[in-house]
Image (cartoon, rainbow, N blue to C red):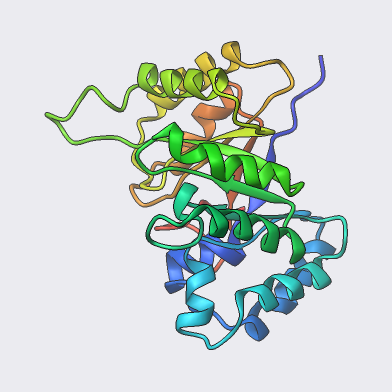
Length: 254
């Protein structure tokens, strides 16, 4: 029986910058590292979205679209360039009208993005409906998200493996088009055993060829344990980052 190869996305150029440098990085300063990454064989790169979109305009005096264009040029036509969207907030901090939700997907497609990870922080599946439809409509790989975390003592009940699998079932019961599923721990706090149970359960619920991904941060120092747990539970891919933007509040070191 052949060994399963676990895929990874290099988050250095989005979450790495966001988590370690407050997303404030000039494009000229990292573009050579994009080329070096592809030369090293890394073909799945996080290239924008999240706070990186805002920070380029707010703090760097640059266009996030120009940045994405330059990453696509350096990475070449075959790289999978991924961004992060906040459901109906897309890349803003508040809810957006439907024309902006559609324009987000249309513009990101135009500027070289091939995958968008789409999440709602409160796991309200309704907020992934229209945003997910538009991502898929414009020919982008829609990676839909179940948001995971852990809670302090006395708050038990809402963030359990059973709760996450219920969220997954609601996604599967909906008509939201998607091509992969990510369980996303933005806090880096989810108990590895709970994650193992979640992925074990999810693997039984979805078709065999469904890609299950995991995203976490090493904020609480348990990210490697989490990654090992989800891989043992059936994950297909995880997120990792390169030094000097790995570890701590970012993803573990590649």
